[in-house]
Figure 1 (tube, rainbow, N blue to C red):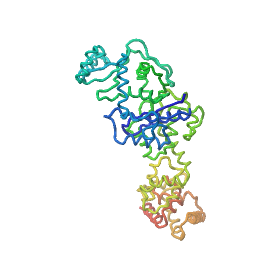
Figure 2 (figure 1 turned 45 degrees about the vertical axis):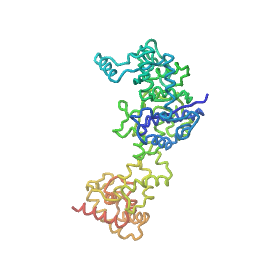
Figure 3 (figure 1 turned 60 degrees about the vertical axis):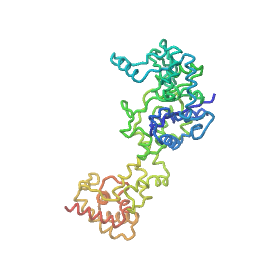
Figure 4 (figure 1 turned 120 degrees about the horizontal axis):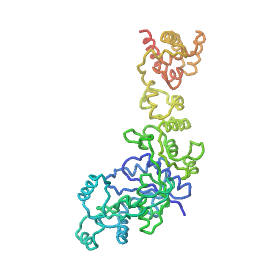
Length: 482
């Protein structure tokens, strides 16, 4: 048997991290087993359809290296792969279920259902459809159909016994049948519901393993009843735990941590994100943490999926991202960081390649870069207290003397290079009998206005150039003189 998995998103907006992880796991398992990964667009809910969302799905998956073997834009033997294009396929199956007694026409109006729902709530009961229309005779049903009365088709779920199935992650699961609702299979507009279409499509597309979120655990018995009614073999189920921000909170759009695009826009690398996301709910069984996509395929095992919520720790992702950034070839890092430099340094004459050398080891997420290098474009406001450093044994008084010492030294350098800056400053410090830190720390503060910088005083001075360095040094002396 060839393994066939599918990812079946609804085009309702950006790609949620939970959905991306589902796609990733389906892809990894299919490739690990030498099978096929299918992309299917489930757009039966036209009210929630978002223009352009399908393209976002394509771009996100392909950007992450998750390519599908069959799908809307690549074709395949089981198309169409967009549910709205399959609209005419579903009604014959629904009518087959009506003929066999596993489904029935329902003509109840929205107002009637709302009234019954309110009555159930008044009694403190959970509303469940009462099979009212199941008891209509064939003649009554036909009369209503002939009269054009709007209808839906509902599943005729059993009311006694239990429905059982096995899930790879959660084991054997059973639900009392009297808790199952008669879910709608075909809507009044002639479109199938998700619950019906996904069963029909999974069967027709030969899906062998259904890997999806655990929110479908309670719906699966109803799906299996449909498989049984048609005499089809149900797929193997693999329900995935929820991706959480912490033990109590889900990822949320408001907090900017729910969508793949949130993190890409912030400057996280897609490779780091995919690597980390794979580990949120699955473990390889050893101490490895860093994987290429090919290595994930080799290591992936559905029996090592966790049955407890996966915690998406942004701090851990950031650590992963920093490691990935450090491993970038220098030229690739420069290419990626340049737009972030440009936000605050465009037109300032800063040597980007040298700045990139100083920044690569310090970069955790690219959107933090502008604030880290902003001082090179414009000296920030700072307090003279910054000149005080216990380890360097400096204070404003020591700093003033140090700046007065180095000012003529810097003014005397004709060829402004890092090496010349280093040699001249070290010679002056040695001649004065001072410690390096007692001079270089005040110089760093004077020309950067901050205690933490990429590179030290010498590198910063070279990046700024002679004129700007001396201007800032003079400013520092003025601050210390007040």
